[in-house]
Image (cartoon, rainbow, N blue to C red; front, side):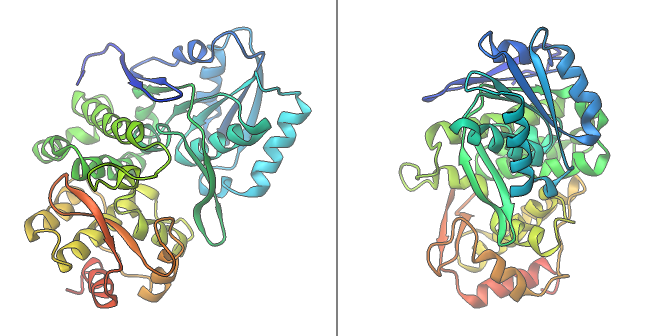
Length: 368
C-alpha cells in the first residue's frame, strides 16, 4: 500500500470498470473521469459543503454546471428530495450524455448516486467523498439508496460510478467525531477480510485519527481494496463462491446498526452504529458457537481504542427486533446475520434463537 504523497490509482474491474484515485490534492482528477462527452454537469452537495463543491467546480473547465443542494445528512434521502432534484435536471435540459458529480458524505453519495441512476434510467456519476465513511464505503461499489419510514436504504439501485476521487486533504476539515465514526467501516474491513487493518490500528490508534498520517492513508487504501475485491466478485449481492456471503459480507454489523439508526432517528452516526452492530453480532456468533471468545472480545477492544462506542442499551430490544425484521438480508420471517467463524472467515447465521438475540443485546447494553 502506498503511503507517499503521490496518488494511488485503484482499478475496479467488471462490466463497467472505473478507477478510484486516492491522494492529497487530487480534485483535478474529476474532469478526466467525466471525459469530453457531457455538456452539463450537476454537482450535488449538501449545503455545508458549498466550499468544497466550489473547489470541484473550479476544476471542471467549460462544462455547464448545475448546483443541486441537498439537506445535510440522512434527511436528504427521501422521495421528496429526489423529485426536487429530478425537476431541476429536467428544467436544465439534462440528457443521457450529461453527468452528475456528488460532493459529500455517505448520505449525499447514496442520494446523488440514486438521482444519477434514475434520471433517464441512468446517467454517469463521479463521486467525490468528503468523509472517511464515504471514502471507504458509500463511494465505491455502485450501491445507491434512499430511506423510507420502514427503514434505511430500502429503495435504491446498483449504478456504478464513472470514477471516484478520494482527496485525503478534505479529512482535515472533518470534526473529530466524524473521523472517528468513519473508522467503524474501516475496522469492519479488518474483521471480514484484512486483519492487517486491525493490527495497524492496535499498534498505533492515535495515528489512525491523524488526517495527514501515513497510517490513516494506508487504512483508507486497505479498506477500499477490501471493498473493491468484494464488489468485483459479487456486484449485485447474489452470493459468493465456496460458501462466502459475497457482497453481503459488507453488511457485517449492519443489521443491528440500521435498527439503531432508525430507532434513534439517525442521532447515532452510521459508523458508530456499525461499531455497535459489530459488537452485537460478534457476541451473537459466540453464543451460537460460531466464534471464539477472544475474537469476539477483540471487536470491542479495537473499536474502543479509536473512540468508537461499544455499549448501547437505551432502546427496548423489541423495538430493535422489529426494525431488524425489515433488514434487506431477512428472508420471510427469518433473520439472517453476517457473522464470523473466525477472523476474516465470514459466513451467514440464519434464524438465531430469540434467547441468543436477546442475550447478545444484553451484552451490548453492558448487562452481561
